[in-house]
Image (cartoon, rainbow, N blue to C red; front, top):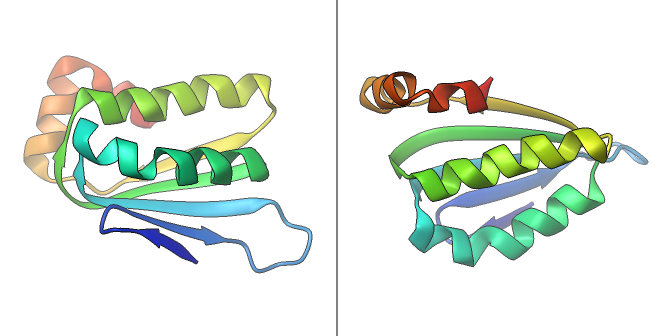
Length: 107
């Protein structure tokens, strides 16, 4: 289990031969936090075929972070990777995403 500061936790599957990882994002998910997690995030995605993303206890999230998620979902199809997103967001953030159309990325 790897952790980078307070924004991301990477938990690879413990089953032998299973290329599955759960990546949990929390706290501030903004342009300022992406730089510190980007390399570990990309490495985990490249090494696994099943990627479960979880967003929880999110205090702040911006379009840059959503672009990262969107990019992963788009590129995963051509790489034959399975990506799921579970977002446990505050009502304010859900409303903002719903009104802007960004919520489609999380489905």
